[in-house]
Amino acid sequence: MPMRWVSVALPFLLLSTAAMAEAPVAIPLPTAAATALARSHEVIWGLTQLALLVLPALLLFTGLGARLRAACARLAGGRRALTLILFAAAYLILAALVAAVPDWWRDVVTAPPADRPQIGAWIVSEIAPLVVKIVVATLFLWIPYWLVRRSPRFWWLYGAMALVPVAFAVLVALPVFVDPLTTDYKPLADHRLGAQIEALAARCGVGPIPIFVGGDDDTVVGLGPTNRIVLEADIAKSETPEQITGTISHELKHYVMGDNYKALGIVTLLFLSGFWLVNRLGRAAIARWHRRFGFDDLADPASLPLAVLILFAFWLCVLPLFNWEARSIEHEADRFGLELTHENHANALLYAGWAKHYPANYDWFTLVFRATHPSLAERIRFANDYKPWEKGEPLVYGTVCKPKD
Image 1 (cartoon, helix red, strand yellow):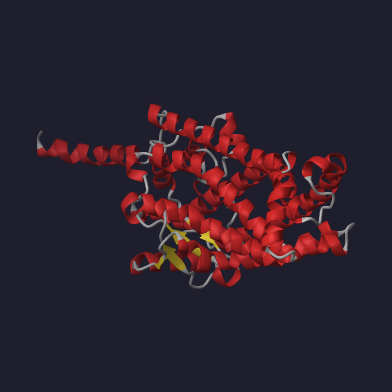
Image 2 (spheres, helix red, strand yellow):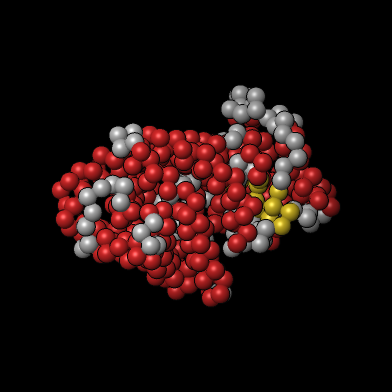
């Protein structure tokens, strides 16, 4: 081709290349493997929830729970508090054994070979949460049981209020004392990336942010003094620099807007509603089936499976609403990130890459019971289309963070 034609055509080639680079990202069709994996996880999740409902019901209606409590009382020498601790520990161990079977099937048997953990690491990941639950039960379970005896009518209100500070303390302690039991977290060592995060945070009026690297998820954890952003260990290998910017800006919304405090508010409502139901439904169940249960008082440690059954059933009922609220929060984090960085194309490509392993659209079961984030298809479409700055429209978070120049 003559040079004069090259000089004429080159600008058009560059323009067409740029247009192709910024063309809307297509929503990938689900692969057979991704669909099969998603379906298997749905079945495993459903069977796990069913098993965790059957366990307390079985202990109650067979009287096994009352007999187990009697054995714990003998070991405790009749001391009420120690009986409760032993019984709670025994129940938590039983529940962990029940859940371990579907967990093994999900994490090891059906997981892609690249994602399968080492057997030792998997065992630690199952035992560490169990130990934490037993410790928490030992420290705090006596509170509602003591209140049931002291104030039978209003224990549910006092108990919920008493456990809110406990929940706050647990959320504060998780990143420092609990999470490192199963995952190795290290402070961010990439100074360039650290400077980039500080620059984004400064536009939102936030000082230096604690950034840690580890695990397989990007998230914001902790409350108050332990609030921090966690980036997955291999983020530099799995995401481009532009995608990392988008990921950080998404998580920055949770940090800046205090979304974990919203979670604490939701926990408070769940405590109040759940304890009220335990009081009303628990007393009604005891009045009707106390002979089969083997106890006739809600203050009896043997009532723990009854409380668990009611609380867990209540949780499954409110789970769709909880997931809807979580998806709304995550959608706003996507909006926040796009307004802060304008990395629309990079984000859309990132979500499209995830769709190789997970279906881009949800079926009804996942949408109702499991989805805490918008579907990948929704996130791709939103990243493709949301560009109010190009139209001169106001930004939703324009008063929270300084808009990009």
